[in-house]
Amino acid sequence: MNPRIFYIIYALYCFFLHLLIYCYYNYTKPPLPIIKELKTMQKQSFQRFPIRYRPYDFPSRFPVLAFLGDNWTISVNSPEYLHFHNGLEIGHCISGNGQLFLAGQAPVPYEAEAFSILFPQVPHLAVRGLQESRWEYIYIDPKHFLESASDCGSDTWQIFYMLQEVPVIVTAASFPLLYHYLSRIFREFQEKEPLYQQAVHGLLFSLFSEINRITMSAADSVMSESGDSYSYIRSALSYLYAHYNEPFSVSGLAEHCCISESHLRRLFKNMVGISPLEYLQHYRIQQACHLIHLNQMPVSVIAQQVGYSSLSSFNRQFQQYMHMSPSEWKKEHLADATPHEVRSYDDHRTRHIFQI
Image 1 (cartoon, rainbow, N blue to C red):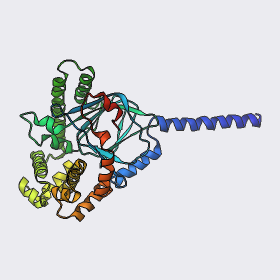
Image 2 (tube, one colour; image 1 turned 30 degrees about the horizontal axis):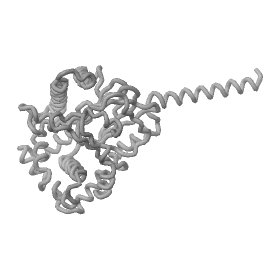
Image 3 (cartoon, helix red, strand yellow; image 1 turned 30 degrees about the vertical axis):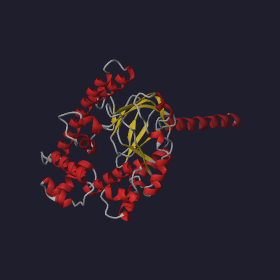
Image 4 (cartoon, rainbow, N blue to C red; image 1 turned 60 degrees about the vertical axis):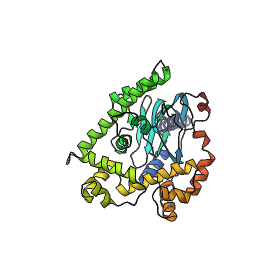
């Protein structure tokens, strides 16, 4: 064979081989450098990345916001920061694929036609492949929504989303009943037939009931040593929500739950994923973020409001969880607070200010 022809054939072979490898890693999954960096980020508990608060202003009568259509895109190609909301986020992936990263959890892959369920106060980050991933979203204030039901306790909305077994990505194959409810909810918002709000109301209650069943069933299987495990954690979380700004000790919490301190620590770690003290610190800082965002009192007063006896202790904990000082966080969030305030779930103007 002519050496020149041989080299041409070899060059074409190398070119198409590299093209095939490039297409595989960039069109079927997020680019490898991003995945490696995000896995490192997860192992480090997101310590290198700041966390931003994205609150929404929910209507009081019907505390639900819908952002429909394919205008909302996931365009992140490198991790810069995580964010969390004051409401439950339900996403519908219209096209594309990628991975969803949550603080303290393993990454979860998503693909077209899947739904995501992200509960309030959970820092997260969605990463796409090379192609953009298009989504539509519904946000719900679960506290006020569930409290309208006479048979739901005031703490029900907070109990089930703290358990690790809640599904984050829902597909027709993995959770068919949840998938059915979620599809119906989005369809009701899209079609807006008469009484659609009442229909959404009923579907959301059915959705929450099924999620609660899943978490209770998972909790029973994980903690089969005691049939009261779920009730112990429910009691502990209810107490923390009501007394988070008061002096705290694990022994006092265990006494309230009528179990030993070691038993409580083990239950809490297995079912919630972190220790009672870690959870309390997270919750205090989250409440502080909300108060800082309201901008109605100085940081020193907010520190006392959320249970810190000294400003230095508050600043240290805030820096640990939010990766910046309270004053830095306040300056950053007050500067761009307006784009995240949504007044109406069917206001067409929100299309121009909503940000992913």
